[in-house]
Structure formats: structure tokens, C-alpha cells
Image (cartoon, rainbow, N blue to C red; front, side, top):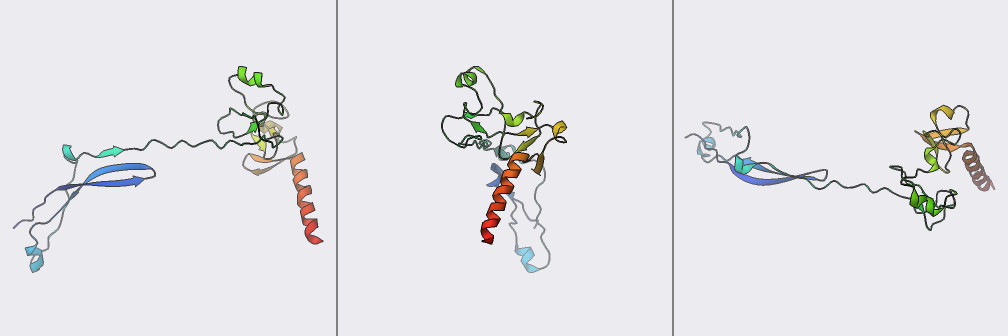
Amino acid sequence: MEPQLQPKPQPAVEVHGGDIEKSYVTEVRNVDMAEANDGCCVTVLKRKRGRPAKGNRVLKTTAPPTKHKKDEEDVCFICFDGGSLVLCDRRGCPKAYHPSCIKRDEAFFRSKAKWNCGWHICSLCGKGSHYMCYTCTYSLCKGCTKRADFVSVRENKGLCGICKRTIMLVENCAQGDKAV
């Protein structure tokens, strides 16, 4: 007797990186196993190929994409105090400032649609910046890097001359305390 294939739809749920995919899997069963158990013939199980039947369509349910919340700072980038802060409108910039620290009044921010902080403007020529200091608002465009005191630490971020000297002073003092 020829083995009979009976499709039995069973829902299977797979999760891939937040996406939930629900599909129907066709299970293949061999009804007559007597021939295989006698040893006279080996039964090979085959799955049906092609599209699933209309009733067994693949249903794909996707979860809404997770929004990556911008990690805004909760202290001013200049004075490191909290309070009433203004956030930079540049995409991906987490910097926050007091209006008084950047010499602007709150009316300026109410009237102007978008405001980019000084981190995105070259400190020497005023063009768009490419290199930014980790610890202050000093930044440089690609053209001004040759005539400026700036050490690149990681990709386009680094330390300006003033911040580098301050950090070296702190490091040297810390090493001097250990020697005593």
C-alpha cells in the first residue's frame, strides 16, 4: 500500500528581532507504517512543495518599530547645573544648555523654529563642524584642523587644547598622589 500524506495545518509562531511571524506548517504523516516496520521497504517522507492552500496562508504580524529615545542630558553642557534647559534641535544631539550660558534669552527660543548648538559650528571659521570636543563646545571643520590644537580620540570626537591640558593636569596630580 502506498503511504498517504495528510496535511495537518498547525500554527507556528517565530520571533525574529521583535517581529512576530505566524505561519502554518504542514505536517507530513505516514499512515501505513507496517511496511517500514517489516524491513522490506523504506518509506521516504516528502513534504508538499509550492504555495500553501488559501486557507493556510502565511500571516505576518509585525510589531510596531521601537522608537529609539534620544538620550538627552539633564544638566547644562557648559555649567553642569540642572534647571530650565534648552535642547539642541540637531538630530542625534543630546546636548542641553541654559539660555543664559549660551547668551540667549528664552524669547529667542520661542520665536525661532530650530536651533543648533555651538557644537555643530566650527569655532574658528563658523562653517559646519566635523570634529567635536568631548568636554566643551569647541568644534572644528575639516579645513581648520591643521591650524588648531585638537587631538582626535575616537572618530570625529576628541579634545581641544584647553581640555587636553586640563585632563593632563588632573591625571598628573592623580599620579603624584599615588607616589606619596
